[in-house]
Image (cartoon, rainbow, N blue to C red):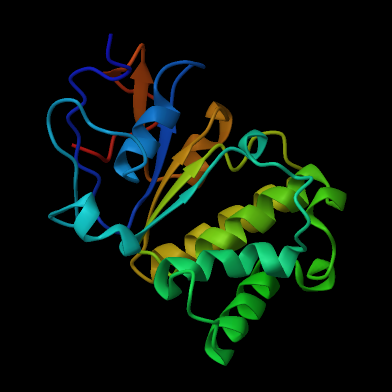
Length: 211
């Protein structure tokens, strides 16, 4: 049985869109499919009018924190730098501009003082910001974020939303899986509701932007 059924949607450019639904609704599956990480059995996914394989460099995917092995021996700066390899490949060495971009993003996420710390020594909120740094240094036009606000401290939540609003002013688009229904209207332009792998009618407290 497919994880997603009859999902037909269009997310406008330059919005912050929430992806909402109970556990097992298909939110992570949808994000991974858009990112090109899962095969599509039927239908098609187009990003900026192109198949995902033709514009993967314009898309950045952030996985759930629980999917990361935090024992891996990397510090925060090194983790963020791995996001540049979507442009560099694994054989080219990073240039000074790549390192400069990493430092800029770490500053935006209030991680500069933690840049040399091992990722396994970070708090949950700090780990989430480190993952977001890796996504942001890709300089993608579309951000697919899987539960970036789950179980984080207020400081991290505020920083993440501040950065997403800044990126929106630059014309970037964010599709964000979240369980925090209480802040949808304040933090997002609209919401997509999934249940049992299907699109559902949105709840009245949030206007549906994707149509």
